[in-house]
Length: 213
Length: 385
Image 1 (cartoon, chains in turn red, orange):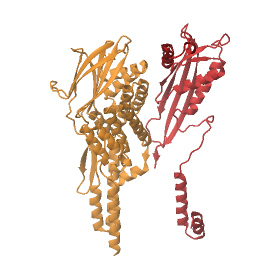
Image 2: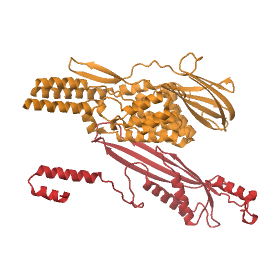
Image 3: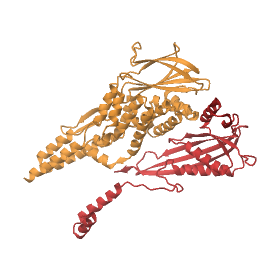
Image 4: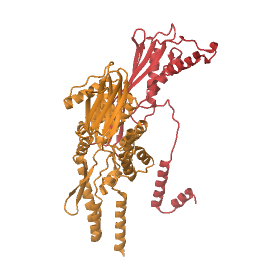
């Protein structure tokens, strides 16, 4: 006898307690089932007040658009060359800020208005060049030395957060307030001047029950 | 016949109650702690890796795992264990109806262990150390900010933890966040009447020894009797007789001027336990009333069963003495100012005032760049460490 026919049998019988029991078991079983679903990264999603991929997306889009629409860095005479010096994490969360700079760099490269130096690969580039110049590679195939690009600007920034928890008192919910501020700046290597700077602010409140099962 | 059936049911309830509440820390934790004390941290980690630990002691599992892994130099493993411990602390930061009901009917052992506030702070302290030892000062600064937020919420009983507070300042400074460091140094200066140390400049270097010595005294069970059939059991820390470790540092053969910061962890634990004394007392009173009510109700049905119930309820009243027992007795921070370059540093640590017999004697050859600060962690009081 399968579950459906059992349910039908119970439904016809006059045992409300048994029906309630069966419904509870169904509800518990469906609650325990593991599920997976694909999320649209363009739709904002937050499970709690802490930093998540929606925040990263908002930060990257806002700052990239700001830089691309700014006239502070002239791009008409040639594509400015940028080196990324990273974003300092001054929040209370272990956030990999490399993800922010990687996405900003990608958007700027795709815009075709900026060129980037690969700082992370510098020692590998050096090692590869040395290998080629050591005589293992035919002269006509060797890369020329002294032809690397020089940076015009340094891209750097800071991600900060301020957190506030509700003070201890009699209540049923615990509220938490988090404010994120991400500053990004382009420093002209020749003059030392900050040629462009902008920031993104995100403030969010989350609450959770103080009593639970 | 009916009375016999009732008695059987009552006995079954009591057996269930007694079975439900195991008044002891999970066995594998005790085994691992013993292995660690005997100088076999790898065996201890292996024991914890394969351990089936009660849900009530999950936090202790990760706290012990984190600390033992750190003492064995497995900083990444330790970091993951402490991250899990932090998640559990966060999960348990609410009033659980299930835990409260179980602990009111039986004893506090029935509830999941959320850690004393001091232990919750030290997860951040030891995590700060992991990040510093992994040469990731930005991660250490994140933990320092979390510790600072924790101080905002629970600071009064923890403010004498000069070790954690100095480490917070050092984490900010090492991460290149001088404002955060200055704030912490200023707070320390105000609370302990100290002069804030100048921040490390580009022409100097520093070696920082972090010395974890001995083992923290365990929580002890205490009893208060109210007549022959009423008892309250409570945990407490006995006064500790473990002395502050004495350190001597020689740089290239010459005695060096060092700055030390030491915390006797049991003193902070005592203060944290006292701070939650009121809530412990309220729960004890509720439990006493609930147990008496249960016994009286049973007595109404059967005098014999009521007496048995009283004996059982009295017997299962046990003080919750669970604690993070792999913690050291003292955490000492020794700052050795150095000129950039190569140095031979000798360190002697003695747990008694008689410095002629040292617990630890080591020589370190270090090379520091200008502006560099290096951390070294040492644990004393364990064989072969």
